[in-house]
Each structure stands twice: as C-alpha cells, then as structure tokens.
Length: 274
Image (tube, rainbow, N blue to C red; front, side, top):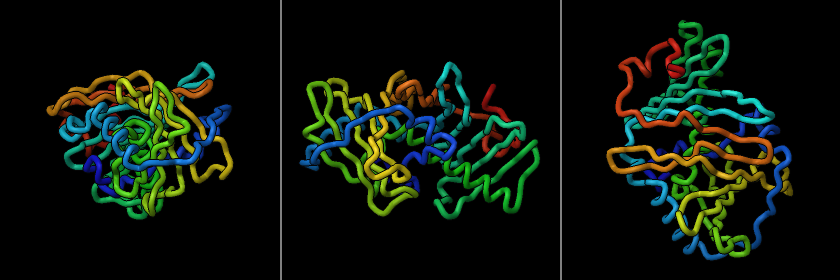
C-alpha cells in the first residue's frame, strides 16, 4: 500500500478469522454512517493521523514483536505470537498449540493466492498439503494481526478510498470512512475511524465486514493502551487494547527490538515466549 510503503500485497483488512467472528462482534452497537462528503478533508485528517502515530519512524523500525489475543469473560485466549523482520519481510508466527506449530511466511514473496514460507511442528518441517494449509493460516494471521495493530498507518495504502463523515464527526473526533478497491481478500469491508481532534490518534473504529449482513450494525472497538516504540526515526505510537462490549482484542507484549537471534526466522523451536 502506497501510503506507508507497505507492499500492496498487504492491502487486506482483518479477516476476523472464523473462530473469532462471533466473539468480537457479539453485543456491539454502532450506527451506520450518514452521507460521506469531502474526500480532500478526509485526506487531511488521515495525514494528521499517520503523523501522530509516527509514520516516518515506522519506516525505520527494524523488527516488530507482539502477541495477538482475545480477552473476555474473565479469560485471555492467546491466539498467536508474532515477530516481523521489517527489512526482509520474514514473519514468524508461533501458535500456542500442543503441536508447537511455527510458521515462517516470506511476506514480500507472498500474495493471497500464493504463500511462500516454511512450517514446523514438533521441531520437524511440514510438507505437502498440510504445509500449504498452514502457510495460508499463517498468511491470514499476518494480515489480520498486523491490521489490528497498524490500521492507523495504512489509510493511504493502495486501493483504500477515504471520505469524511460530516454527520458522525463531533467536538472530540473527526470520522473518516474507508472503503476499498479491487484489492485484498475482502474488498467489500468498510471501516469508520474516529480520529481524536486534539491528539490525532485513532480512538475508535467500527467496521462492517463483507462476511456480515449488508444491513448489519457495524461492530465498534475503542483503541486504548497506547505505547510508544522507539525507532531510529523517532517514536511509533500503537495501541495494545481494542475494547468492545465485554471483549478486547489485544495486540500486546508489544516491542521493537533492535536485533533478534540469528535463527529467529529459521529455527523450528518456539522462542517468542521467552
């Protein structure tokens, strides 16, 4: 996507993988937007948001490490541990299963229909149809998890259409509406971003995914728990919590290491829990 120099292959929104769809949308209410107007104003707001989140610093970040989890009902379910080499595009995913599944996706060489990488289970390399299936799972995790974390930095990506929602904006927030061209796995998704007028940070988003009914009320989450990551080019500000009614999507254990072990993107042994 052109806005932050992320590959157009990443022009995809959170799939809300099948096991999570009901979990994250249950009980949430968000009114649909009124008529969208003034795309130039939307671009101005979007630019202020990417600057507040540290776009220039993000471009210089060498590695990104975080967990993706779901919190609800007094319990936290870890979904995946993630480590991204921003220089090479290598992306390591460790699933918290008894098979000790490690998926390493070469994101810069992959597309939704063709995923390149390596899969290990129990320290042994997986091949054949099982490998292909797990690589697809890993690529979907990469798409889903990083979008929950990085959405404020991706509003200028290729294929993203931005418009200002005048009737939903108010004293504290400007609202921009995102739709998408013929890009990614789910081009009919829609998002509404609530940008804090004072800080420029994303305070809330709502979405209606193409897997949801066309007249469904968008699901809404507040973006909280912001942390600042140090990068050579400055600070990147990202949220660790995304809170809806009785649920939270977590992108936590968030850090920006300056170096990682030499075998971080080749080792078959889980290492991200250390």
